[in-house]
Image 1 (cartoon, rainbow, N blue to C red):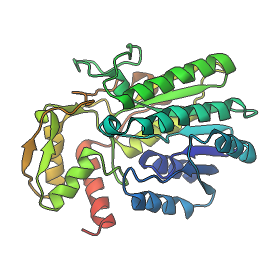
Image 2 (cartoon, rainbow, N blue to C red):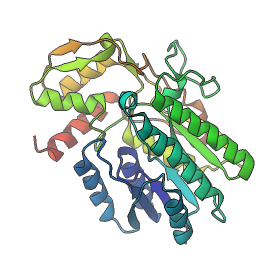
Image 3 (cartoon, helix red, strand yellow):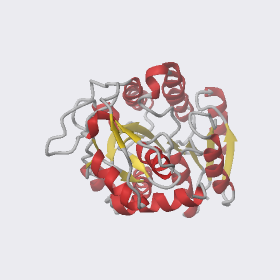
Amino acid sequence: MAAPILVTGAAGFIGHATAHCLLSRGETVIGIDNLNDYYEPALKRARLASLQSVPGFSFHMMDVADAGAVAELLREHGADRVVHLAAQAGVRYSIDNPFAYERSNIGGHLAILEACRHQPGFVHLVYASSSSVYGDKPMGGQGFSEDEPAVSPVSLYAATKRACELMSQSYATLYGFPQTGLRFFTVYGPWGRPDMAYFSFTRKILNGEPIEIFGEGRMARDFTYIADIVDGIVGALDHSPERGSHRILNIGDSQPVGLMDMISTLERALGRDVIKIMKPMQPGDVTATYADVSKLNALTGYAPKVALAEGLERFVAWYRDYYRM
């Protein structure tokens, strides 16, 4: 019988979906989360409830930065793979709450690294990085490549994610266990995060409220549907690099969409128009993101399948059902 897989941030958006996918193929999954109040704890508990009804899942309420507790959990269950998705998310939130990122992102990542290096027979650590590490670079005609230097983060959130990549590189060199860092581009879909633009816009549109559009609407994002993201995560997990190796891979849709185009698509999915209030760019935001996913494709066959219009229709259907609107 295969050893269990630890999924951190299991009550989060991506962690919840990844755990479901792993369980659906017969894996045993140990989930941890601290269920903090960065956004609706009730939504996190609902995600968790959907997992707890599936055989093979167990949950531990835990702060990922509690290094002793994380290491003990790995030892107790004999987990040999970790999908580390727990983090303090949000670029704008990091402006006013910097120490939350120090503990969750830096401290949490270090706790996972230490637990993995002491775990006998450990196979593979897959962890969440972010497209934010690229900084505010011109989009151009090519996607952002993993081979480009990522030396100019424009938010503390991005800086912590780049720091995690460097920490992982050092641990791979020192201790030899294989690691994969995934630079996520903008993830959306059912069970998503209420602080994300598409989610908050939906809420405001259905409530008849205007929406604020930052960057004067000139921003573009590589919106990637959650099921496609999970395909990439699990594919990467299944293709462990050699011992002593640490690799970084982009995971996105590779089809950037302008913010105004996304809003128009969302309006069609909702069957409503919205009043738009244009605002300047916010500190820490970047103009555009655009994933070159050729490396992940070559490794796993990764190829996103869900177009934005279809993905937003699925999200709107989930939203109306979940919030009974």
